[in-house]
Image (cartoon, rainbow, N blue to C red; front, side, top):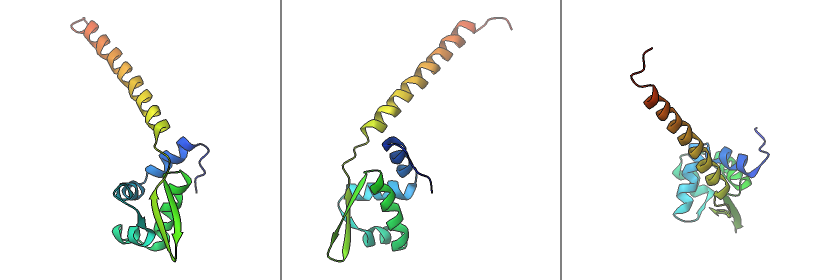
Length: 112
C-alpha cells in the first residue's frame, strides 16, 4: 500500500478514488454508519472499512463507535491547502496558455 508523507499527499490520495469521493458526498448530507455506506456502494463491510480508514487518515472523515455501530462523519480537514495548490497550478497553466496565445498572434501570417 502507498504511504503518504504529507497531508496534501494523503488528501489527494484519498480523493483519487471515486468510491471515497462518493463517501464524502454522502457524508456531506449527514452522518452514516459503515454498514449504511457499504449498502449504498454495494460493498462488503471490510471493503468500506478500508475506504473509511484512508479518508480518516487524511483527516477527511472521523468515526466514533456508538454501541456496536461505527458512525462516520465529515472530518475537520477542509482541503484549504489542496485548493490553494490547485489554484496556483491553474494560474501557472493559464499564464503558459496566455504566452502561447501571444506567440501565436505574433507569428500569425509570418512566412514559414
